[in-house]
Length: 348
Ligand code: RBF
Image (cartoon, rainbow, N blue to C red; front, top):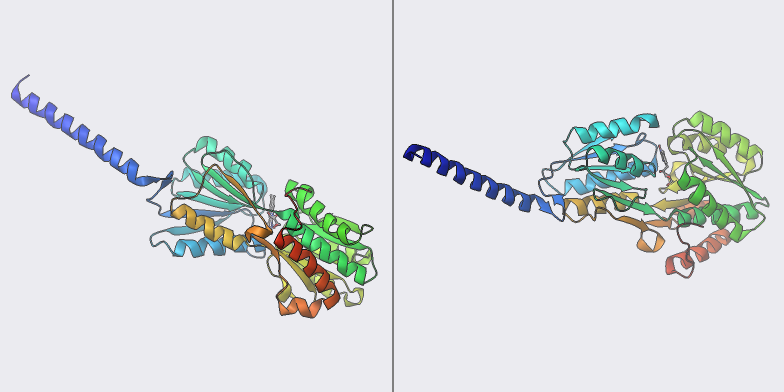
């Protein structure tokens, strides 16, 4: 080998070694507990529309608040719309763009979709709230104990129906899905039965999460059939049920709100608020990710005693709308749930 060739070979070897060394250094600095420290962008995929859906509004607020604490981190909020057949394609496109260190979303249908996208983009990380899937290394999920959430609503609904001398309460759902039929509806019925085992639960499905006119029609029919209280879980369509109740004051029918504090939406017609603190969960878990500590692969379940599920009873509008006799009984049940003397596992 002549000297010039020897020099070239030496430089090449040195460059390679340097390159390898740099690559190693980068690996170490970008991976902290499996999370890249060079985070610049987070996508929030809203499966539906944010406006009018309390659970999605909380998601947006919580993520925004966490990201604001990390300069240089940008957030993009992408609405998936109401055609659920398009969600997987849209999610795939977001992952394929390679722009986002994390995709955040919420509802119990999202883990399966994220898992399917992960087959093509295994590096893409997901933080999914209000859903469950464990053991997938790039997916973290957190769900709420919705048996507790629905139980508290059912208990109040039955107290109010009994006070009014009736035996029927209703639940309006946007659609039928496993968390609704296996957890929320049974939890609501269970809470009601613990007050009065003869109470009848009238379950009806709006068929979508946006059509307020359809929901108003449904609610009007339920009121006519003798439902004293309606628990509304139909996103943007809920406003139709509120309208229907307000338009039939003689019936005495009332609404229980789900997910957020709804008393101020239409006093005095909203008489209960069974909530999940999804804004807090979105904030805490986004922050944990940005700090490099979100436990991907895990599925968490949180409830009343974890501070993520509760019933709002310290709102003056609740005090005004509900008699003290009913509030006292509701409070006694809540105190038991909060102290742990009444334990409701996730499934009835
Ligand atoms: N809840 C809403 O408030 N708005 C929605 O648009 C909405 N869309 C949903 C779509 C699917 C496929 C599923 C499974 C649930 C949806 N939910 C929606 C319900 C939500 O995840 C949750 O169960 C309820 O808000 C009760 O906490």
